[in-house]
Every structure is written in C-alpha cells, then in structure tokens.
Length: 177
Image 1 (tube, rainbow, N blue to C red):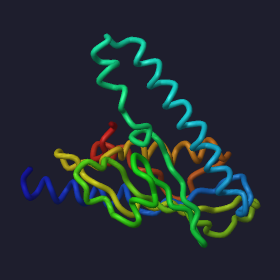
Image 2 (image 1 turned 90 degrees about the horizontal axis):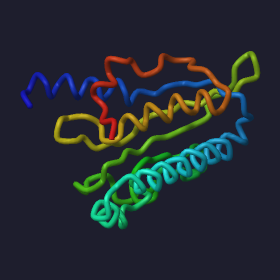
Image 3 (image 1 turned 90 degrees about the vertical axis):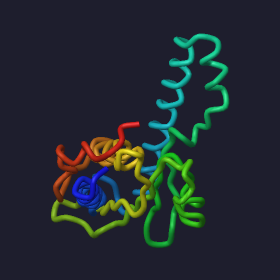
Image 4 (image 1 turned 180 degrees about the vertical axis):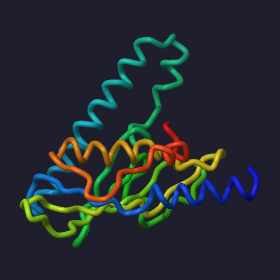
C-alpha cells in the first residue's frame, strides 16, 4: 500500500470513527437495557445463522468450524459510570485493559454516551469508535459491523440520525467480514 493510499485510508477511518449523534425513543436511564436487548437479539441471530451455515458444509468444514468462538461474531456491552463501552469481536474488558494490539484481534471498541435530549423528548446519544484494528488492505476490521450497529440502533430504538450517518463512500474503507 502506497503512502498516498495509506493516507486516504487513514482519513476515511477517521471519518467512520467520528462521533455520530442519534435521537432515540427510550429514556436516558433505559438506554443500556435497550442496547443490551438489541445486542442479545443480534447475537442470537448470528448464532442461528452460524448453525444454519454448518448444515450446508461438508463434514471436514463442520469439524474445522467446531471451535469457532462466538466472540468473533458477537456484540458486547460494558456499563461504565457515565457511558457504555461497546465492542464487536472482542470483550470490552479485554479491549480496555489489553488494547487491540494482538494480531489475532479483529474487533473494535466504541463508546455510547447520552448527549442530552431533544425538544421532542427523544434521548440523544453520541456514538464514537475509539479503537480499531486495520486488516492487511488498510480497512477497519469488522467496520461493517460498526456501521450496521449504528443503523441498527436507529431502527431498533425508534430513532433517527441527528448528525450525518457514515458516508457510503467511506464504507469502502471498512471490512465487511
């Protein structure tokens, strides 16, 4: 990857990581429970899709997949005093304590914090991508899952974007794995 290309990837990653503000239809005190409920639903659907994919694989592929950890396909939430830490592909506690330096980690660490409320009574939340790993092509590992999380929070929490959503052009700089 050339220097100019690396620079454009870095700029796009920064744009994807920028704070997005959403207006959601739940009370500030119930944001954590609502997000956890969505994550539980998404993780269950991911597990079901994984199990269904095993049925279409030959015996060797099923055997090779038997030790695949669900953490590689799950969203996680860790409550902090003033915000929520969210991750995909790695536990939030590990990401906070150990960082994302291990070459086998293919996840990211984000933060959700309440940001006041609107005139319509909706709760505003700010979502930021704090740490991430890049794949060999310079894309955010599982960055597509971050964009899906943003859109899923909008639809799952009866919300809307206050700030701009992730630009479609910047989605080329996230890994859809």
